[in-house]
Length: 95
Image 1 (cartoon, helix red, strand yellow):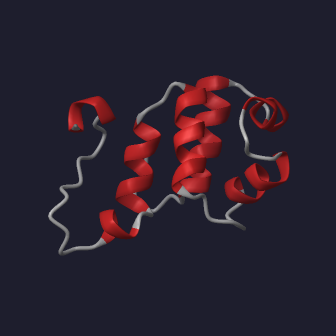
Image 2 (cartoon, rainbow, N blue to C red):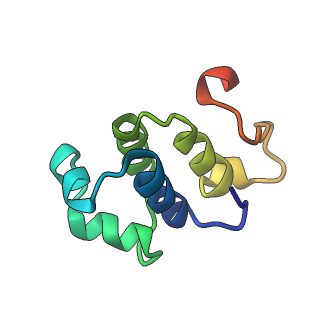
């Protein structure tokens, strides 16, 4: 995992390698439309926290939330934030 990778790119990699779900299957099982998911994965639209939470639950990959928080969330990106940035740590271990 690269820290320079966008959340959308990361979500696509995790969807295709860890779950082997298609965008159609994801859109059927979440409130995220096929079009929205495609735009997020292609970097044309920014994922919001709810999108990431839904995908993390569907993919059974809680580290997606950590990746989002440390790379895109304004609180997690703030260099003066008191929030530490654990890398490659499961969400359950952070809490």
